[in-house]
Length: 109
Image (cartoon, rainbow, N blue to C red; front, top):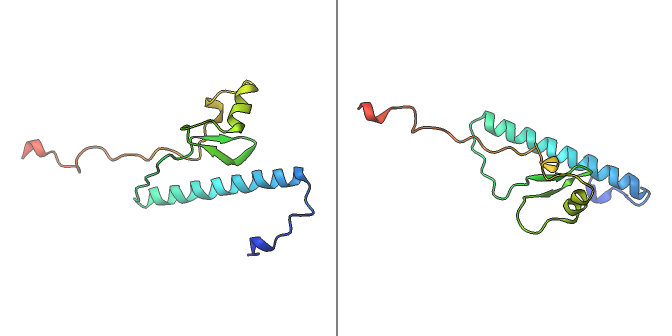
């Protein structure tokens, strides 16, 4: 793998860099989703606090938990007529919680 510090981004146009940022964000989201799926499949519980709930459709690296001040990209999207629901990310899902107390009915003793 090439050292990311050695990649010369100077020749890229702003548009190309923006496209690259989107692709990088998508790849990061894909790898996170794959990792989470693997962890859940192997019985590992995932606990995330303030996990991103919203994601900029134009730049997947920009996320927001829904808490605190809205980022500029959220304000812009809402001003353009989008809804918060349209910005929800499906890459990060809630962790399924186990139900019950371990399988045994303790009342039947």
